[in-house]
Length: 264
Ligand SMILES: O=C[C@H](O)[C@H](O)[C@H](O)COP(=O)(O)O
Image (cartoon, rainbow, N blue to C red; front, side, top):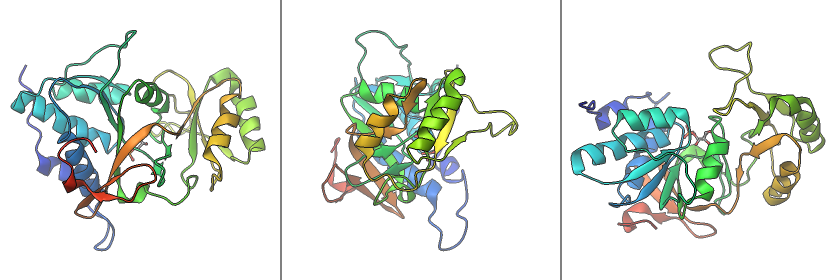
């Protein structure tokens, strides 16, 4: 079946800038995605992230597959990304033992200078962490609003087994996380569900002083399936600001992305 042609112009028009001084986030996301697509090589197995920055990456990757003859195989971190990948013609692999990825490209809700991340604003944190952990290289693509001095202003998402919800919320409140059950955007009277059918809880810490300690405290809460702290997983990030894309690596000064013709 002939795949629809998706043009950069279409991607740029996803949302208009809100005012003359506000950053054009759609353009920044597209720039980060375009930079990452340029580093995908023939024969790679690629993990496909989720969200509004990963989506243009998937679309542009599909364009390279269809029009440039790029041979890759991929697995997606959400049903939405899987559907998009199918639409744009990316060959998909089902999960199986031994499957690893050369590269995963994914978005983030917050990243700091050590490339510690908060993820899961789109509810895909569990599959995202599975695929990131099965990847040799996790590359984050982000607009300029995602880079922070300290993690925690963005509410930390948790995926929670429904039966365990009240006790998980009690435990998170004891840790100072002000838990809020996420509601369904389409049906605000109903809770949101992950692709696995679990609930999502957003924890308002405001500031996370010690992400590693918090991760250790969260992971032992029964019924808390996964948390959105991604620590020690990202090898690099492309952070776009205005018309400039920079490469961030853990603890290193940012470098212009134009310096790199391959993965940093
Ligand atoms: O669950 C969603 C993911 O973690 C996303 O990658 C994250 O929320 C960033 O999404 P966006 O690029 O849309 O801001």
